[in-house]
Image 1 (spheres, rainbow, N blue to C red):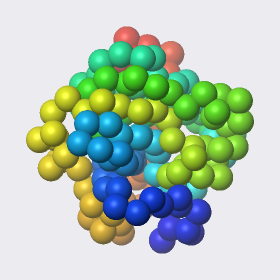
Image 2 (image 1 turned 45 degrees about the vertical axis):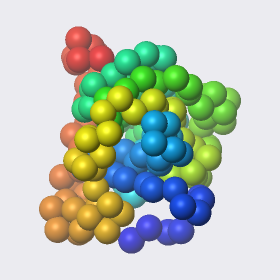
Image 3 (image 1 turned 120 degrees about the vertical axis):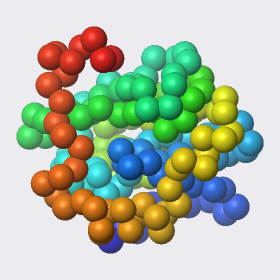
Length: 154
């Protein structure tokens, strides 16, 4: 299913959400967050990203937005509750990092995990792939958002 562009480090746990974010645990409190390779492939080329603002977020809260080459907009959600303490400025300078390496150098932000119990709500890679195969088809992925109609959500 995945084409192998993924950057992987040894002994680092990676989890996924049903809204297509990944979270890579660097230690017990710090993690990288990004969008999955699969969702980037389906949505096509990302041409713009609105990165998160540094600060506190609840699990499931909107932290950013991407716009694709065909003009569609999609939200990025916080996979866990915590603090965004760093953003990947490199993708602001080169959005192709997100297109080429969405599960690696194209990470979006770094979180300080607040509630380690939320890790149990995330999916393993196998569970995420099963979720993809069993419950979703390309027409049922995250609905496009009209960013300006939903501005109060952001």
